[in-house]
Image (tube, rainbow, N blue to C red; front, side):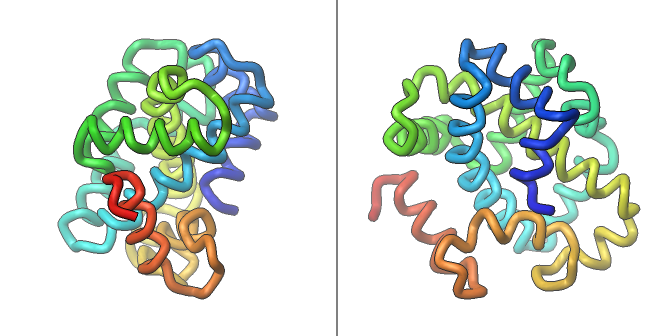
Length: 187
């Protein structure tokens, strides 16, 4: 199951409803927004995980961050620390507030939802992505996830690949490059 599916199905859809409640969106609008935001986040996670330091940092955060609570108990998304965690995640994954704004602006174009609302939803979405990845780590065990971290091995990167490989050519290189270029206005 990919990350977006885990988020959409978390607690019978309660994670989606709770995320939407935090920013004033209904369930359908929230699902639409997450469908636009999560692939951009997945591309950032995937890009960071390509380096040994990035992968080690991600696995360390998954092991110690307690992020699984966001998908196991969506009411935790109402707490300010969910937004603070999400903003920290965005800093690591996207690198700058400008990149985050670019993701929100692009998602707004795709969905018709206000970029201001999407900017508020983005840290919650980042917390949910980490929660979904953390849940996968807990179910498969850290050593299993570390051993299977590479793409095509059934591990962490395989959860992200379906969201990033838009043209289904088996390579995410062109897709991640295109997403990053669009975020920074280079495509």
